[in-house]
Image (tube, rainbow, N blue to C red; front, side):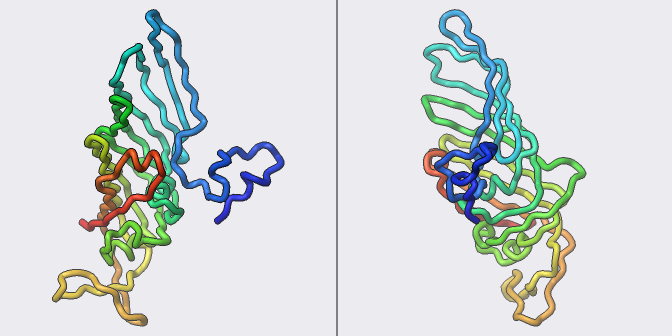
Length: 239
């Protein structure tokens, strides 16, 4: 999918950074921000409020005070209606996830000596709201597990939880999805291997009524991710 409007729109209503020309809008960048602040004595700055667009949702920050000479700053991002598909596509480096899954929650952050660190954060789907996720290249996030790969192609979810665990300049992100595959899977259970294997074409598949999938993005290099937008390798797990 090529996004040509960024170059050829003549209505002046389509806005997109020129560096993104030729790419679909899957990048989860902060944009369209608004910060309300006031100056205080001694050169300090008091941020009263801030809001940004991110991954199809909105992010707001708590009030904070910035003083000259500060080398460490902590803030909390309050996320609302963030699009999980946009987040995963940005991590994968390509548009492979679709579906409607909105998440809200908090992400504490710390800025120290110019380095950004994510603290323990969480995002959750809206209680009582279900939906479906579709992944066109499940092998990119399945970690080589056949069952995860086939199940996540079309998955009806009951709820979704995202957990962020930051340690220094590294970040672990675990996406837990509770639900069931939307179709029979072309698999069978192999007693000798103690695992599911692919079923030959034409053979009956297996219908699974309930799964809890964990998609794990482990040891993400924040500096590399933020500087280059590099893709991240993920692994899957089943409960």
